[in-house]
Amino acid sequence: LDYYTDQAKKLGYQDAIDAIQTLVQCNKALLGKTENIYSLGDENYHVDEIVKKMNSMDKSDILAPLFLFRCKVAYLHGDFQLARELLYEVDKRRKVLDGNPDSITHATYAFLTEAVSYSQLSKDEKKKALKRMKIELKKVRKRAHYYAPNFEHLKNIMIAETARISGD
Image 1 (cartoon, rainbow, N blue to C red):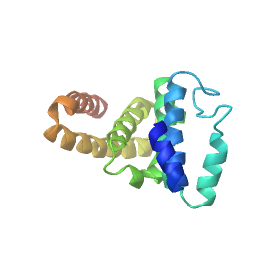
Image 2 (tube, rainbow, N blue to C red; image 1 turned 90 degrees about the horizontal axis):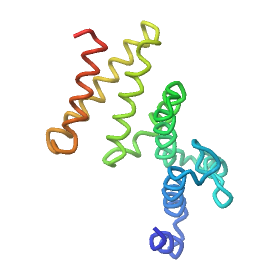
Image 3 (cartoon, helix red, strand yellow; image 1 turned 30 degrees about the horizontal axis):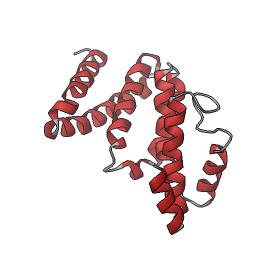
Image 4 (tube, one colour; image 1 turned 90 degrees about the vertical axis):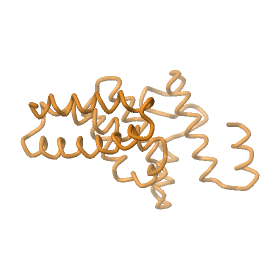
């Protein structure tokens, strides 16, 4: 990543520099080397400043991977309400994930978050959650059709969860 950061710096592409640094910080966070489990910040990287800057520049779409990372961390730590809130932040910026490997990660965590939250939702929310789960399953089915070894197991889990929730 240092090579890419150096190239971006030489060319003056601040968006690329920020994106690369955010990826580095995601890796640090997974290793427990940031301020806390949900933050990418440390003494050299001030995530709140980056978020503020991107929002002020109307480039908040670039923040989708950050919110997706936080969603995954919240889900894995069992904070499903926070995972849902962060998922909606990703949804606002999902266009940036299209065609990106993170699009399947987004579909997976969207599905899982809705599934795990399902029993605590109101009737209207359950209807929306089930609809969303079916949309996300459709995306994974498509990937599984072309890349079965990588996605077939995920598709099968999602089918089983959909059946469990809908009572089939």
